[in-house]
Length: 158
Length: 176
Image 1 (cartoon, rainbow over the protein chains, first blue to last red):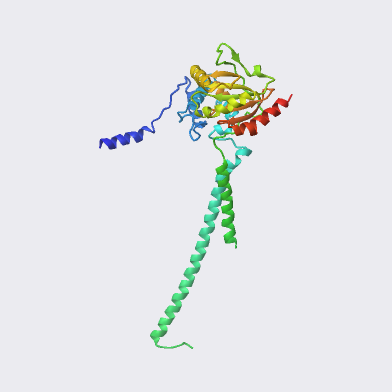
Image 2 (cartoon, rainbow over the protein chains, first blue to last red):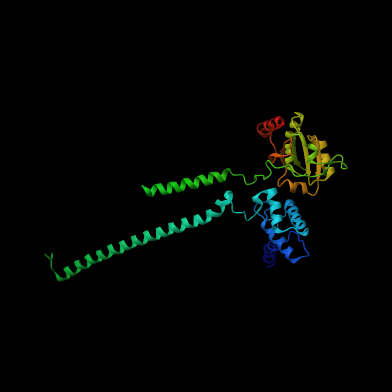
């Protein structure tokens, strides 16, 4: 039981992370700080945001964001600062432009392709099933007629 | 016939995408700095902390800006290559000692040799951020006008020096 509890606590602890905490005096700025750190990618550990990451670079970038907001810079200015230095890759939500269009369009295209495939697949299946039941009905008809004939004790009807 | 051609085409498309994916290097992020002016800094020199260096001091020179640290394992692998490049006197090499302790950095250079014409200190990593540094070592090639012309992420190998750096440096030295 103790061991189970221990394991449970270990599992739970992973979701209660706070890499570090910074408080801005203005609650609106605090909110901007939190959204920004969740939208900027940590470039060392590429699948984490700088809010999630423990890497030194992420800590430095958090400090940078914090300081810029403290100086009264807007969210857009911080994003511009980061993309000037690290490119669009630093953004978890890359802007829609020529280079990134595939990124935005591809999921829709794939979804459409999937839907079309499913549509034709179902239609074909249905048609085949219809034909089969028709053929099946005919077969039972012939069988029935045979039975009737044998019951009536007659040979060929002609 | 169509029954075979459609899956074949789909397979080829998939294979092409997977092949492209295999050859991509997600760790090499394209630098937005190419052909842009090297970000300005004013940083204390490692050996003479009271003296500062700025990119303006290097105008008219082709220089290599190599980001290194004594805690960085790949830098150790890169170091002999830089030492060799320094011996050829082909280019002015500036070291950016990134997020390091000055004493550790000095010991490191004493032990492994010093390829840098000058090293500057960036203890809190701010210059690093301005140069978009995300993985040490990184190396920038900056031309006589102060524009960044090339960025290399990760350790520079002897092959890189022969195939990329030396030809580029020669070309830049020839520029007015």
